[in-house]
Image 1 (cartoon, rainbow, N blue to C red):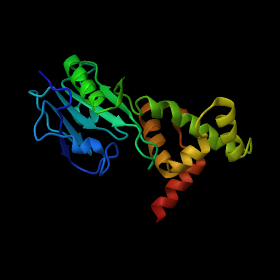
Image 2: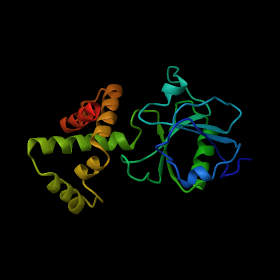
Image 3: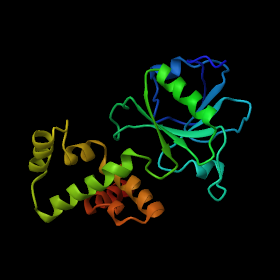
Length: 213
């Protein structure tokens, strides 16, 4: 029977979900039924309860391949939501495919919840849940700023005071890095084709300045 806290970690590269010093890293076992690959990449192992692949902007299918909507196994994707270089949040987006093993989903959910995280399960779509929701809003706010509809301060204050948000869209996207916002929205635009994901001008400028050094 799966021990709720048992998990093994394989670090292939630096992890955005669990940066150095994160307590989750210290709780790993030498071997366990659930194996977590950090920094992308994975090795298939049907004998495990679940094989977890950390995702950035890509879909899980980029790692596993796809099969006309029948793809799925004990391999799942995940990402811990993080706004730029802010401290990672307590939310794990667990990515399933159409034929993913229910037992693998249960094992992964139990493991993360036992480690103190909130888990939401979502389909294998670019941007998962949060980025698909918030990136168009950031783009709209940046375009309003360009159009002179309102100042950055006015938009942020309106969202904090009028909508009860902890911060406003401009201060949040700026803190999270405009260049990274450009990377994320460009990837979403490429995979979804939705114009709402087209990077706003200020994000494109930030990306080009980063590339220029």
